[in-house]
Structures are given as structure tokens and as C-alpha cells.
Amino acid sequence: MADLDNGNFPKTIGRYQVLRLLGSGAMGSVVLAEDPRIKRKVAIKLMKLDAVRTEADQHEYLARFQREAEISGLLNHPGIVAIYDVGEVEGHGPFLAMEYVPGKPLDSLIKGGSPLSTKEKLRIGVGLADALDHAHAKGIVHRDVQPGNVMVGEDGKPKLMDFGIAKREDASLTQTGTFLGTPSYASPEQIREGTVDNRSDIFSFGVLVFELMSGMSPFPGNSINTILYRIVNEPPVEVQPPVLGILPEGWQRVFSKVLSKRPEERHATCSAFMKDLLDTVVDLAKDDRREVLGLLGMSGEAALPAIVSTSFDETLVVARPEPRKPLWPWAAGLLLALALGGGWLFLKDPKGTRLQITSQPTGAKVFVNDLPVGATPSNQSLVPGDKLRLELKGHQPLSYEFKPGEAPPTFPLLPIITDERIESNPPGATVVLDEKVMEAKTPATFRWNQGQTHRLTLTVGKLGSSQDFLPGETPHGRVFELQEATTAETRQEPSLDPNAPGILKLAGGFSVRVVVDGKDLGEHAPGAKVSVPKGPHKVEWSNPHYFFKETRTLSLNPGQALPLQIPGLANLTVDTHPGIGKVFVDDQDAHIESDGSSVQVALGRHKVTVRGSNGIKHQDVDLKGDYRANIIF
Image (tube, rainbow, N blue to C red; front, side, top):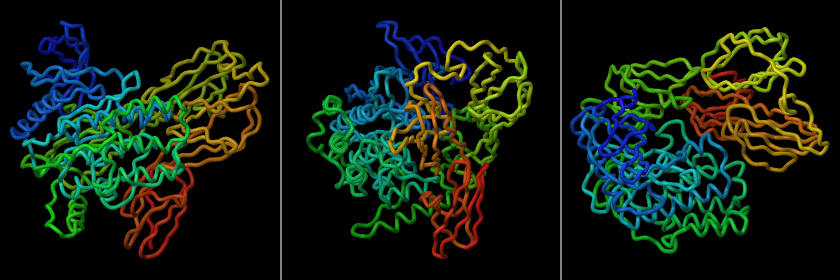
């Protein structure tokens, strides 16, 4: 098949006129096109058959492609992406023409996009609930309900997509030995027994909503075996601090039910779950509550008939337990197999091993044997000797030769650090880099981390210059021309209004919750500006996910902007000898064991505690970068 990634676009696909590439992955590409007959924009998915190594796999992926078209043809719901056409174009393989949804994928909104209000989050959840209940009423189980398969349109409405691995009640297309879906969202019965029904989708949807509302996973882990073990055996994690605007007791009750290990104890429908959750929300205005409730379909009022799987399904294969015998031996065998596999989901055939390739940070371009195959996270089939390369702007390229059993769970990409000379006209300018005043004045040389964004401000009297730099961008010897500032903000002058509030400006690498004088002002992303009355205040900014909390007393003048600096992140790896134990950072559960597992932690001083059968051990660390703590019991 021709390579769309390199701009080798066909002018037409079927009757559709191709406009531009929307995205590309390991198994296919999506282009924006127009139907000339009705002037409608469509998204066209093309399969890369040449990326599939075996004829059997090609047959399987073609079957999935056809099934997505057939199943989507059975569904007619505003919350499900519509399939308009299916066909094949010479030289580019099979294609699906589907509804084009201008917007953003839900996973990007959860992880790094603009903060969503409680109402916006509930509207997304309710819209998806109604869409899933519609599919279940048609006898269809999606089986991969996760944020990456949801598009949020520019109008804020969600669209569920990718029914390529969905299953109908009467489906006969099966394949053993493959985990289809996403591990963090799999249901306990899918992991234990290899079967799914509509209640498995309800569990996965519960995980999605938990993450949407709180920003964290209910079953976190740094390896697949840890995640799957927690899904099967442990309750969802406690969210601290509690989600703003939701009663903590109600949160625990609702999610304990929808994420129950026993399918029969869960909510009967996705809409019933969302109605239950809405009853725990306390900060919605009456009109907003009425609007969100109005989006719930009638399917939420009564239980849908269970969709029973009639075959050993396309999920992670473990031996089916004998009747009336305990399930724990099979769970233990599953965890052992995953541990021996290095924590990778894989599909073994005589020619390859399927691996989930991830990087920190994500979004790195992936090359296999110098051929581009997509961006991290990416699922690839590799054979021994395949050469993998990851490239990301502002970071050092990373190369790896695949050897079975030796693949790390995450490839750490190191930032490029350079010395950058900064000059200005006139010289002698004060340098402010990322809200920090530097000692030297221009011309001067500064250490520059190309792996992150920077804001550079230069000032001499009333003259100044300010510029933002994206990852990989540098001043590169440029001479900055300083000009007279035109606004009070650029001159950093106080407001003429004596009653004007001050501004707290967040600068750093991750979101934090801001509390001023004991009042919770919510979670804010880097770059956000928080308005605070003039005068002295006790300000706390924190993110328990990264074990970060800082408190200061700050005094703001009218119109003054003060930075709240957020530190960078480092990987903390903990080893203990002999034996292992549970790891705590600053007395908070890190959700890893001291077996060489890692967790991301904010730079700075921390107390690391390991609790195991050999006792309790503490170690203080001052993180200035990635660190391995070796503790002897």
C-alpha cells in the first residue's frame, strides 16, 4: 500500500476527494475527504495491509474492518460515529468512509487539555451512556470502551467510535490467544474467564467516567500485571483530595457498585449508573441538572437483557475454570504468565510478538527498521532483531533492538540540554526564564532544556521582549530587539484600579489543585491564571498523583501577577534486598512494589517508605532527576 505518512495521497478514494491526512497509526491512516455529490466532509479510514506480517493476520484484520462496517450499519444514534460507505481502492486497500467529527479525542482532554467543568464532564458521560445503552439494546458489546475511542466535538458532545472488535450475540468471528481491548479498562471477568457481555462494557464505562471526573485511574499501575491484578482483586483507589462538588460517600458508593467484581452487582445500564452518579453531585445549578438529566435516554430506566457470549471470546486467553472450583489458581497463573512476559501484552505467532510500545513523554515517532509506523503509545508486532527507534522533538533519539523478554514497560526519553547564548538590543537586559529572574544580564549563556516549553522575557527600563518556545525550539543565537511595552501586563506595572485583584500564574509541567486561605479553587493546568483578591494569602498548590504539595504566604498588589512554580517530574525506582514490600512516598501509597518498579514523582525532597514482611524501612531522597533507591531490609 502507498505510504500516506510521506504525503503520497491519492487524489480520490472511491468517489471521495481527499483533502488532507488527519492521523496515522501502525495499522492504518485516516484522511479528511469530501463527498462531491452532497458536499459532505467525511473521515476515511484506510488499512495498511502491508503492515500485517502474516496472511492469517491479514484475513483477521480484513474481517474486523468488514465487521466494523456491518455493526455500525445496525446502529443509528447521535452519540455513535456513523459509517457511510465501505469499499476498496487499488493500491491503497480497503477503506471505511465515516462521519467526520471536528474536535478532540477524550483521552487528550483528560490528560492535558483545557480543564472541563463538572457540567461538561457529566454531559460527556451521559451522552456516552445513552450511546452504549443503544448498542446493548441492539445486542452489540463494544469491548473497548476507553477515552481513546471517544471524540468530543466542538459542541461538547461525545461520539463513540471504533467498533472493529465489537461483538454481536450471534457473532462467529473469534480468535484465541489475543487480548482485544485496553488493559486498564478490561473487566474482571474478561481477565479471569475470557468472556464478555454488556455488563463488561458497563464496567469499562465506569472506569472511563472515574478517570474523566477525577483525572486518575481507579486501578493504577506501572505494569500490565499490576493493573490486571488490581482490577481482579482490589477495590478502586480512594481519590484524595475528593473530587470537587461530589459527595465523597456518594462517590464511593456509586463506583463500588459500577466497578464491582461481580457483574450481577453492577448497575443494570450505563444510564442508570450516570443517574446514580448525578444524585451525588452537589454543585450543579437546578437548570444545569435538569439539562443533564434530560440527555439521559429511556434505556436508563430499566435493565437491558443480558448479552451472553456463546463462544470463548477474543480476549486474553486463560484456561476456563472447572465448575464449582475456585478461580484463584487461574488468576495466579495469569499473573505469573504476565510477569514472565515482562508485563507486555503479546500475541505470539511463528513470526512475531505483539508489543505495546510506550514512551515517557508520549507522542514520540516510532520507527521499525527505519520505517515510520506511528507514534507512542503504539502496538507493534516485532521479531527478534527488529530495530526500534523513537524520536521526539527536544529529546535524544532512543534506539533498541528487540530481544524477547527484555523490553522495558516504558522507554524514557531524555531531554536535550544545551547552552544557549541570549543577546538583546540594547544589551544589559534582565532575563526572566519561566517566571524566574536570572542573575546574569544579556549577553549571557544559560542552560536550556529542549524537552519542555519555555517563556523568555527580557526587559531594560520600559523596553522589553517576550517569547514562548515549544519543545525543540531554542533562541539559537538570536539577538532580541527590545521595544517599548504597550500594556500594563507587559510592563509588569500595577493596575490603576486600587481594588483590582492579583493574579496567580501557574508555570510548570503538570496540573495542580489551588487552595487559597482554605478555599478550594479547583484544579488548573500549567499556564492558567487564577484571580485572587489583593493582599496577603496562604496559598497551597498540590497534586497527590505526583506527591507534590507546596504552601506559601504570598502578598499580591492590585493587578500584580505572581508565578506559582510547579517542579518537573522524575522516575523513582525502588529496589529492596532481600524480599520486596509495598512502597509509600511521603506516607502516601505509591501503588508499586519494591521490585524495581518505578513511579513518577515531582522533583524535590521526599520520604520513601517500604513496608514488607521484613519490617519497615525509610529513606529520604532529594530528586534532581531519575533516581533508583536501593534499600536493604
